[in-house]
Length: 229
Image 1 (cartoon, rainbow, N blue to C red):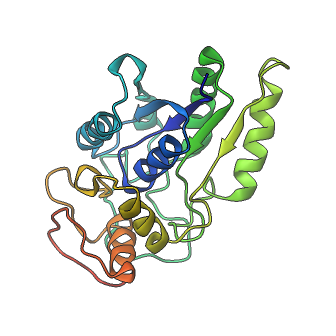
Image 2 (cartoon, rainbow, N blue to C red):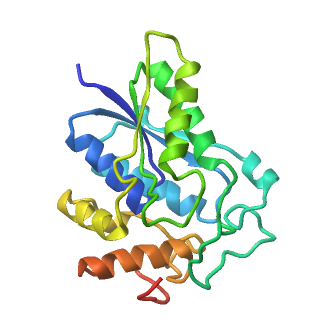
């Protein structure tokens, strides 16, 4: 039997590439998607299902989990309607788009799904090297999170957190995605818009910069294309 792996899949370029990498390695993938009140929730959910379709993943194995409490917590421009997603470029501080402990919560829930399916791996496409400076996207965070998870599972089942893109740049990820034939036009990275990507938020800037450095053109439409971060 194939090894079962849970894949946290937002429908973005990083998580979609991560899913394709897991599929290529011969794993039996169970995708998990979170609706947490993000401003591009509907678009991300569509992209999640489009990527699952492209990977021929059965609907019965897809998890779409609602986490509405994130909007109650607020304090992130991704989930708080009183906050505006910044478009002024990336700086060294933790940006307002950071959703408090999001990856820790995602991984905890993914662990519950892993326990149900006797999965020994959870794959997540976090990026430390070329990301936005989120504190829950670091090697140290993942190492400690894995230790915590394995304190809470039965001794006969240990779970490994797999982060194949952790130290990759956006250029690297773009090239991997192209090589694996990830349907780029079915992925979404914009934090602000659901119809046409803004091109100015941190996520759009990083994605565009990755394509530029890879010498490629992104196939999705942008309102503005900023060619530097």
